[in-house]
Amino acid sequence: MIHFHAGFRFKYDDAQGEVCAEVSGSQITRNGVPAVIAIVLLDREKNEPLPLNYNLALSRKKLENGLLRITLHIPESFRSKRAKIRAYLLSEMNLLKSKEF
Image (cartoon, rainbow, N blue to C red; front, side, top):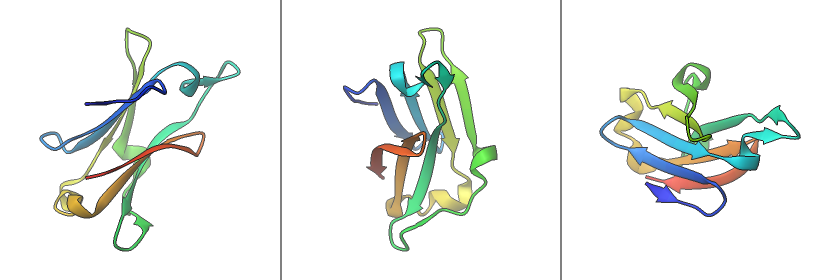
């Protein structure tokens, strides 16, 4: 797992075929309103988002320690392309971090 000082973690789990982020603090709420946190995958060669149903592929879970875990399950058909994928962690559509894998 990669740790960042901005209050979140971001990793790719090859065995599970998932990109996972854990966020805390101001990334979870904005002025008391829940923030929209998402992970988007980009095909680096085409510079286009991977065409998958992100609404169905994303799951969110509030952890006991106060963190919010966001998991994006990557369909098998896209896993073979992982050398050409960049993952973006977004909050309120603001880029928090990108990761190539």
